[in-house]
Length: 117
Image 1 (spheres, rainbow, N blue to C red):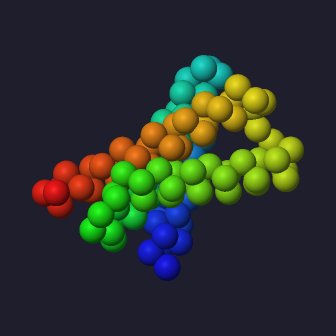
Image 2: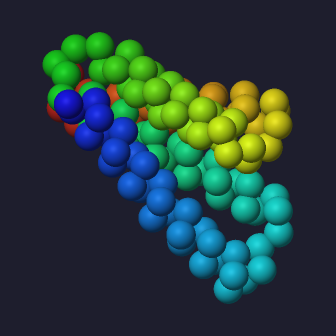
């Protein structure tokens, strides 16, 4: 259950940050490179949060837990992107996978640092 709540928290953060990015896009007419960088940052931050929350629930293997939750986040994201026909090609696929895995692992490691272990 903790894994699902961590994923849910990551997706809630994704929704909030995507709304903020849409507002910035509307308000300041951001170019495509800035929007792409913002989306990549959102992927990383959302999986960082999910990895952090998952790592806090476990006493060991926090890095691995973060990696798993980051990959699970990516898997759901990829399936939804393929099902809707949205997405930015194979290069975006690998970038998103790397960002989600790295964000989850970083969150898991950060949870261990804060716990003092």
